[in-house]
Length: 293
Image (cartoon, rainbow, N blue to C red):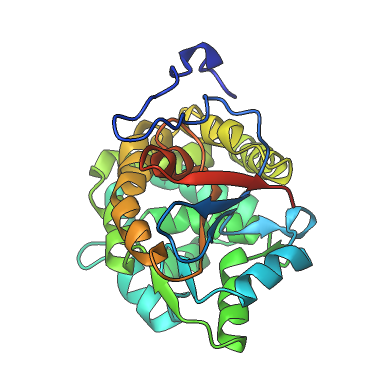
C-alpha cells in the first residue's frame, strides 16, 4: 500500500550550468523507454526499465524495442550478462554457519510451516536446499516457486538478442557489488526480509502484482513510490538499494554513451523518483524523451 503522499513532490530544479528543467515529480509521462540526447554526443542512446522476473501476461517486447537493441553498438545492463549457475552459487552460499542461524526457534518453525504450505517442501527438502544459503535466497525461492513456469526475463531476452547480433554487453555493477547489498545488511534485517513473506505471503504476492500492473502501464514514478513506500526491508534501505546505486551509475553511463549508440536496461525502479536515472541524467544536461511502447 502506498502511504506516502505525492505532496512531497520536489520543486523544479534549475541547473547552474544548464537552463534545462528536470521533469517534475511525479511525472505525467508514462514510458519505460527513453531516448537520451545531448549536444556533443555522436549518436543518441536509449534507457529502458525492466523487471528482472515478470509474469508472462505482463511481459512485452515489441519490434520497436528489438530493433533499437539490434541497432545499438553496445548493451548495458546492471550486470554484464546472466551469471552462470556455478558463479551464482558461489555468491549465494554462506561462507560460515547455516541458514537457520539467522532465526529464532519460533521463527524457524514458522519458516518450515510456510515452506510446507506455500512451497510444498517438507522439512527435509527445505533444509536440504537452504541449509548453506543466505537468507535472501528464501525470498527468491518463494517467488520462483509461486510463479513457476509463468515468468519471463527481460535480462535473458536482451542477452540472447545481443549475443545473436554480436553486440558487446557491459555491466554497471559486478555480481560481488550486487551481493554486498544484502551481505552488508544486519543479521536482523536479513532475517526480517524472510519473515515479511513468511508472515503474509498473500500480501507479498499481491504487492508483486501491483508492481507488474504499474509496469504494464509504464508509470515509472508510481512504481518507484510503491517500492519505497511498501514498508518492507528494501523500502527501509531505499538509499542503499536504489538511490545510491543510481548516483554511482551516472558517471559510467556518461562515459559509455559519449561515442557509442548504447542501449541501457536497468530495473524500472531505478528510472523514476527524485533521484532516479532519468532525472539525474537531466541534471547533467541530457535531454530525455519518452517513447511509448
